[in-house]
Amino acid sequence: MQTHSSSPDTSPESPTPEGTPHTARMRGIRHMLPWLSPRNWRKQILLMSAALAAAAVAILFAKGADWVTDLHQQMVQHYVWLPLFVTPAGFGVLAWLTLRVFPGTEGSGIPQAIAASNSETSGIQRQFLSIRIAVSKVFLTLGGLLVGASVGREGPSVQIGASAMHLLTRLRRFGHIGSSHDLIAAGAGAGIAAAFNTPLGGIMFAIEEMCRYRSFRANGATLISVILAGLASLVILGNYNYFGRTAGGLSIGWPDGVWAVLLVGVLGGLLGGGFARLLIASAQGLPGNVGQFARQRPVVFAAACGLGTAVLGLVSGGIVYGTGYAETRHALENNGQLPLYFMLFKMAAVWLAFAARIPGGMFAPALAIGAGMGAIIAAILPGISAGDPAILILGMGGFLAAMTQSPITSFVIVMEMTDKHEMLLPLMAAASLAYGISRSVCPMSLYHALAAPMLYRAELKWREQENAAGKSSHSMW
Image (cartoon, rainbow, N blue to C red):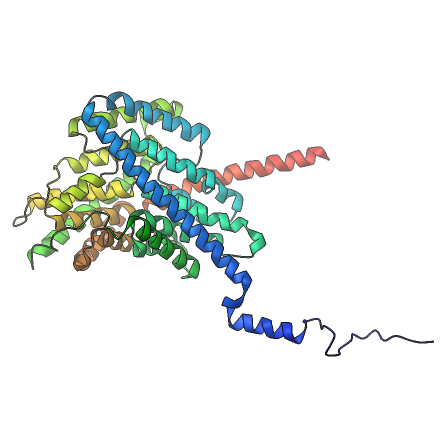
């Protein structure tokens, strides 16, 4: 009787469990030269496509914001009293849409990106980051600018970029493109880079703000996303500076310049830290009857905030509407003096938009507030001309660093936006001092303090949904 051996055929012509020698050689070559792998190329193409898509949306968002801002300015010029009716109605409609139709779009967008990054559950992350939320955020923020809300587009651009990159985590058939934390941080940095045309600032934002309480891994996803976003902004919008070009550096020398830096750092730290603390407290709930009214009638309360914004705009001649970009750029380029009341009026307008919980960021308005603070400092310091652009730039960096408690991101972004590389050392000193003082006024950073309760509520909602799904499955059996 003929017997057959059960041992595997090990002849050179037959495949082995590890594959043919040719296959093994190819795997070794691809391991040494990963750029030859089609799988790696697919991952990189997907990554670059998401980054470019996020940049394109952010750039279109910027053009749309300029258009609706100009439209609002024309309305105010022709009909001075019209905002008393349009702004309250607009705030009310935006609040209703945010609460009823587009949940997850309220506020800046940066806390939402941070909350999603701090979660390990994809279902919770999708409550903050999705294409639906990103598209809705664009149109709702444009609506806010159209009716005169003092909001910015940079925070929403962060949520848009993070949403685009987070979408890659759902494309599992192409392999593991990156962890959700890294992709969200990369998208957030890309949003900042495209919105401000500041690639270096986008990288620093991803490191300092998005990865504040966890280690940052300098991977290709972040660098590729931010660089591509910056290049897309450069190609489409050209090589421009966000706040134009200003004349000269710090116009006063040693030792008078030290007093300017110290005053900006101290005053910026106190005001920025105090304003951040006010925003955090307002997010937790307003006190007394006002807070009760805001909880029970949020749409009517938002309309009241819109009326307050319109009154501020009427009294100030319209300079508190919108992002504050036009007023700040005019002051920097033309040595025009901002009114001394501009800082307080702008802070009030930003708080009203924040308290109304309508979509819109605080990054650009914070820079405008800092410029207003710089105008006050330039007016009280001897030997400095009123409206000195250098002091305004220092004020922008100092106040932003204190409010966000991200000093490196703040002075890098301000330096890139104003093209004032010779002011790097004064900006570093003012931002670092303002940050240190702000920490004593407001122990927790603004965006992370806002993100924590958002994440807590999202986790409760997720658990309720899981429990409901479990009970439904149990009842079927």
